[in-house]
Amino acid sequence: MSTDTPGIDPLEALRAPRDPACDVFLTGPVFLDIIFTGLDSAPVRGTESWARGMGSSPGGVANMATALARLGLHTSLAAAFGDDHYGEYCWDALEQGEGIDLSMSHTVPGWHSPVTVSMAYEGERTMVSHGHEAPAPAPGAGTGSRAGATGTGTSTGTAAPVFPQCPPRARAAIASLAPGRSEPWVATAARDGALVFGDVGWDETGRWDLDALPDLAHCEAFLPNAEEAMRYTRTDCPRAAAHALAERVPLAVVTLGAEGAYAVDGRTGIAAAVPAIEVEALDPTGAGDVFVAGFVTGTLADWPLADRLAFAGLTAALSVQEFGGSLSAPGWAEIAAWWQLIRTCDRQDPAALERYAFLDDLLPATARAWPLRRAVPTIGFRQ
Image (cartoon, rainbow, N blue to C red; front, side, top):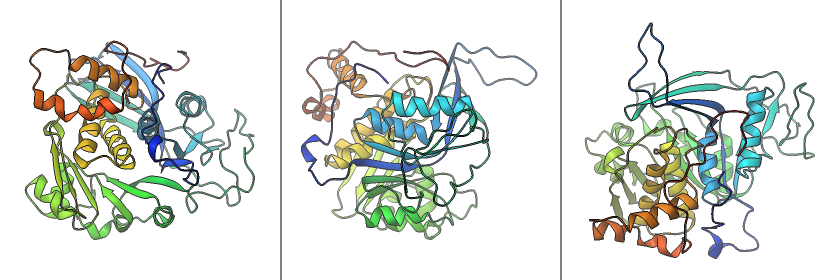
């Protein structure tokens, strides 16, 4: 993480003594991501392709956890880590490098870390992954444990609850919804006061049935992309899909790719649309996760709906200009540098600048020059 990122707490004005220590809780698989960039085209069978850039970083759910932490939210992650060097690297990068709370995570002796190789070209990506599902922690086992190479590490806590039935009390939780699957921790988190933000992937069953997403009933917000939203609502327009989804969840947010995003507040009927920021994309890996992190941040900070969308879109746009998922997640230093630069560019649309004027109240008066570069290129190098 950038060591000179301004210490901005977007929730500072809202914090109270009895608030939960955790701002956002999330869980899921952590991958080691190896990213190749600067490819002119997709690899061709029977040939060797050379990439002009490469990076390694924690991936999977770590993309979103890192994005949240870099925006100043106290983030707790529950995940399994292999006891190989890849797992050690990912644990250290998240806990020591990003300040993410891993007390709900555990190391699995003898289990190797999942790996994804991502190749970015022409603004798109192709990925190859390998891994096996991690075994659940044994009943009564502690969490937050970090095993050594021999798999004999011990827990840092005693009598810790076994995840996922007992997540920590948090302001928000992020759940990955899947057809036919219900995670008991989601209902627990919602019952304990957390705002649940649900994202979703492609429905491999082909049913596209909202009733097959049981945890949607616990969600404060649902954030599909345009294609997913239209399929789930049987509509042919992303905006119509958002309004239909707002009848099922308090907040429906539909991402529109290069066209930005559209959201509807089902409680008030307020809708907001924000166009995308045009950037030269290096690697889109993790951009969707960064968007969700930005939207969660704005929601917890109680910003107007349009500001939340604009901020989420901005953070996602900044992320695609760097390689890697968690490596590219912007912090406040990058946001401040962008805002300082964009106001000095000629022929800027005044209305477009006004859309981001809310940043003035959040950002420091001075910022480092743009662009910033901070990615660690590979395992073993230190910043």
